[in-house]
Every structure is written in structure tokens, then in C-alpha cells.
Image (cartoon, rainbow, N blue to C red; front, side, top):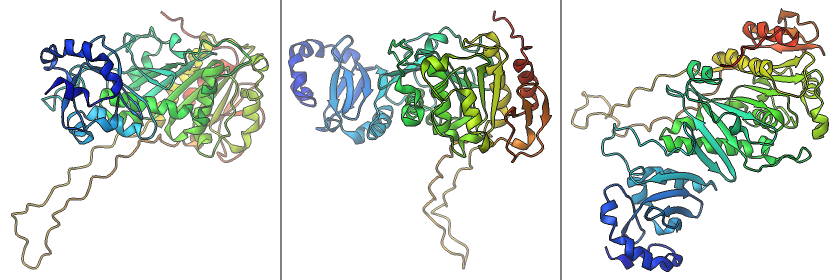
Length: 452
């Protein structure tokens, strides 16, 4: 292929780099063994060192290591060839039609189908040790997979100002403070960084309003990771959430109201800005509210919707929410608060985890050479299309198996009428295991194990 013809595939801006590309073009045969080859709409093929991202306008790519990042419109590519030869890029293209931008970070040898269909895909490049990352708009998300195949995702949403990943980035897979979630329940860990550097208590980042769009941003990040690990079903796994602090807790509360069909269980700890209106579906999601008896930070933040008023406001809807007021507790997170939050999730998630259904038996096509029995109708030669995969929704919590706890005395009794509204000092407790630890917590008797 002539060098000048290849350059015509792309934008006029590329021609400014003509002397540079003429110099490196001679190196391409050396790279061709593992380079990413894309076919242009004019039928000519060009090799790339890396494909950076897919945007609604096209891809961004590098032709050689340390070369400039170039923008290439979709109309300059042969999309049919892309679907056949580079399906990871083609899947990203389909999603960009809905306005998404997908960080691909495909280097040489990563985009093409493996020669052996049973060969494992090349591992995605890691920016943070032990974590994959992706960016959706200005927000960076990080993911750590469990050792086994993931059955769900735990969102760790901590911090007052949106730097949640700072609190978990040193975590090693399968060990440390989040290991039980990875080892017991096979959950992938997901966190994020807003990157705003904001520390003004009077200004609130729009990210907390998950019901206004940022919840969909998180779901887009899961789709990005599903593309990276080549597991489409990963994007639809159920989600547990732990939120603490101003930004962290507000995002989790509002996410539950916006996407209740995805949520296994949630904890919101010592936060505020619980602004989203609950729905019939979101009230069924088991959620723990942790707040200190002497919390006052919501007044500094100028938020009317902290735990105490929200629990009172929506009590008539009989939500599966648990009031977990810390005796003499103040605004700060501490070991007992964190331990209570984790134990709640660990004891509620198993009953909410969707069953793993066995794969449907394959549809057998009739043998075209076989003759039907005399008088029998002709066999259908066209097989039925396979059914759409079902998104695994959490198992509905049985309120009748729960208890009622008195927030002032710590007395816990079996629930007698699941449909009845609870009194002002009463709260719903989902199961006996939670009841035991809840009573110790609200009476100030819970002792958290000291981290190693």
C-alpha cells in the first residue's frame, strides 16, 4: 500500500505530520505482527500502535509509540470490517451512538480476536496497581476484580469531596478490610475520583445527585469495564453500595432511589443531601442509615435532608430501611461505624443475591436430509432466535421475616404486621443477624476489631 494513499483515510490535520510518518512508515513491517490493523472506508488498511478511546465522532489513536494522538472519524472506517476483525472497538462504536465516550486503551495485540477462540484475552493495562480504570466524562472509575467470577459489584463511595478512591487504592485483592466482600460474595470493588479538588463545605458537587444523571454515569463505567474484560454480562450484575461522608453517602442514597432494580443493599453513613424522592421500588431496597446522636454537620452543609428527618418523613411508606443512630455519636466516621456498615451488608447481601440459572439448552436445528414421517408436517427449517439474556434482579426481601427495633431502648421483637406503619421510635430490621449487631451499636456496646 502506498504511504500517501493510507494518509488519505484520515483528516487533513494528519498531513502536517507527513515527514514524521514517512520516517516511521518503514518501521511498520516490524510492528505488523502485533499492530492493530483497521480497514478504511476506501478499502485500504492501516496499522496502529494504540487505540485510545471511542467517541461519538470517532476514535482517537496513535500510529507509533510516543506519537501524537489522532482523531479519526467513524465515516473514514469500514464498519463492516471493524465488526468482523476488531469487535471490541465495534462494540464501543455501537455505544458511542448513544452519546457515550469509552476509554479503550487498546495497545498492540489487544484488539484483534485471538487466533485460538479458547485463549484468554490479554489483560487490560493497569494505571493503578491491582485496579483497572476508565473515565466517563470528567469522572474516573476504578475496578478491582475478585479471585472468582464476579456475582456482583460493591461500590465504595467515601469522602466529603468526591475523592473516594483515595480511601481504597491500597487494597490488595482478596485481603485487607474489603476482603470478605471479595471472598465471601465474589464482589468486584468499584470506586471513583471526581478529580475536582474541591474542599468548600458550602459548595456541592453535582455528582451526588445520582437521580439526575450521575447514576447512569456509574452504569456506563460498568459497561466500559465489561468491554475491557470482554464479559458483556458484567455490566448487568447487581450492586451493593457503601456511602459515607457528604458526597459518598448522598450519591449512594440518591442512586438507590434512581436505580432500585440494580441494588442488593446499601449503607449511608453520616451524610446528608438525601434529596431524591423514594419510589415504591426503592423503598423495598434494604438500606442502613448511620448517624450520630449529636451529628450537626448537615447544618454546616445547609442540607435539610439528613438521616433523621428523612426517616421520619417517609416512615408512612413502610420502607425496608433501618435507623441506626450511634449513641452519643458525632459527625466523624470511626471503627465502630465502619464495622457496623460492613456487617450489615455482609449479613443482608446473601438473601438478596439472584440465583444463578443454568444456561438454556442449545436449540437443535432439524436435519435437512431427514425425511418427515408419512403424514407428518414438514419440519421447521429456521431455528428460533435465542432469547434475550435476563438481567439478574435482586431477590425481594421478605418483610415478614424481619424484626422491629426500638431506637431508644434497643429492644427487638419479631415483626407482627409487615404492612403496618412503625412508630416514631421504631425501625425495621431485616434479619436476626443484623438485629444482634444493631442492638449493640445503638446502645454503644459494639466493639470493632482492630485492623491489622
